[in-house]
Length: 358
Image (cartoon, rainbow, N blue to C red; front, top):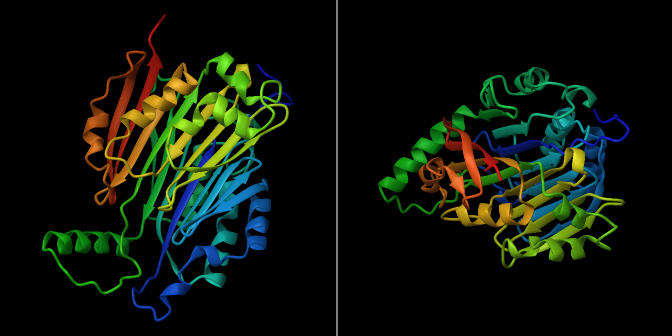
């Protein structure tokens, strides 16, 4: 077993929160924006998480932060905090709620998603992230009506944990919005809580090709841009603006943002004994098959977990059935487990794949 001094946990804790108004009526619609939170307060919040900002990038819809341990994205209604190592993202919930109350017009949480793969070295984590039971306790203290899940069979080496919460008022609003669209309601009155198309595809990879992992070291590349180009990451999506960083002596993070406010993010722990790569995007696609195949060809993992979230308004909602039928990728990876979960307002497909024996 690796010593704790030589080990780094690449697996991220992924926390996503959507905010709303408890009453849809508000006079100053422009004040409803999480990006009104001052950057100094964001830095204070990240100190609680035990990470810091390396660089930032923004457009009209999204603020993107490359962190010392992964990423932060803040848009009008949503915060996505994804952190690896021994960070403590759930510890910042109280402070984040205070910031939202102080600086924005939001006064309620619409949706919460918290997820992560199982750690390789859970004993090195700080509370409340030492196990999922501990994480559930703090999440349910804030959002008692949420639900926790563990996906991954008892005989599987890997599993994936998920916690979801959806505001009851939001559930009713979802049903009403669906009904109005079916009735072709042409009322254009602005609704502060109107639900948006939403989707997220994530690929969590282990047992990576060592030769590819060498790219993400100072020994091979001088900086993040060189690693991005040499690896082919810049060719996954066209027209994405990339902010990348190559750590010393090794390790890599990148955020990419699109003109429409979508994002992609990749984080790489390249050390051979505990290599790990995560890919995530919410860029709208009719199908994510070709994107996932591009990612797999770049990194050539021995194993990976793929998840796809979509709501009913997403262009990818029809991709759920297709993804559930995918038993292999590129004739190199075979599916060993899959599950479909209908959640409040969302559908989830989860699958594990492993490389065919050579």
